Image (cartoon, rainbow, N blue to C red; front, side, top):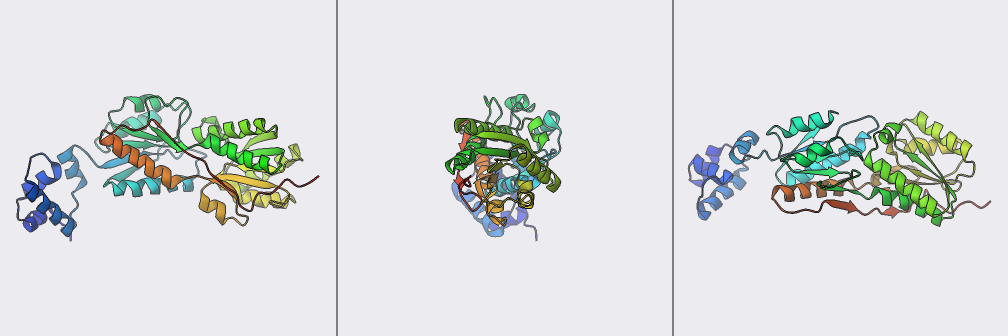
Amino acid sequence: MTVKITDVARHAGVSPSTVSYALSGKRPISAETRARVEASIRELGYRPHAGARALASSKSNVLAMVVPLRPGIHVPVVMGFAVSVVTSARAHDHDVLLVTQEEGEEGLRRVADTALVDALIVMDVQLHDPRLPLLRTLDRPSVLIGFPASADGLTCIDLDFRAAGELCVDHLAGLGHRVVGLIGSPPEVYVRRTSFAQRVLQGFTAAATRHGMTSTVHPCEATPAAAREVAERLLREHPALTGVVVHNEAVLDPLLDAFEHLGLRVPADLSITALCPEDLATSLRVPLTSVAIPSTELGEQAVALLMRKLDGTPVPEATLLPARLTPRASTARRPAG
């Protein structure tokens, strides 16, 4: 049965209005009475109705997670972030409204202009994101999972994707590889200048240049056919290729098939590193050397930052989680000859 505010009042021996005041804080009540009401709430498992709670406190206890499902987005990874945000928000007694439609600034304003949400988490951030001017002027706090080109006046958190790209190349260089390729996200992700893809590209290119390596970059659609085509093109254009960095979760398994079909053994002939969730890297038939995408940690910390902002506590504008590479069976020293 649903527990009502009258049930709590009866159990605590107070009036329903006293229970309401204890929840909203609109009128002072004694510490003893508040303790009795709170004890009854816990014992009975009472949950205030969200609409009533919003009216009482001028807060909805709902966060918006704005993650437009644009072309090129890998939905399983996005859902990993969503689960983390929802779980963390519940620990703070907040629910999450998932906003997935691609409406840009207009959709963001529509959500922010209602009483539906107290704060926003924004994903799929572009270097020059058209939503940024509005985010800087909203009367609701926000946190971006991703870094635009200019983060002034914003609160941003993300994996250090530039360092992640560098780490993958540094690892291959340390194993003696001299010709490397980046098999990147789908082309439309680069066209939008999505932040994480651009920063991986920057890190990959910078590290390859620093090591004096020959390097090449190939965006890849998220299909097995595209994976086969990119693998064939890489080897046709760079016959001496012995190292690959993959930043495209959807094609990891098809790429292993494609390179095997082309007569290359991993890692005896070709070393592969990846940026992907750890469970994916370890589940493939050749466990991949990888930099993990820490979706759980990023979601938890994004919610924690929002809670602090809602409380009026200062937070850092920029939080970069360090990239960490874990060597596994997909990389080895460059073959002789």
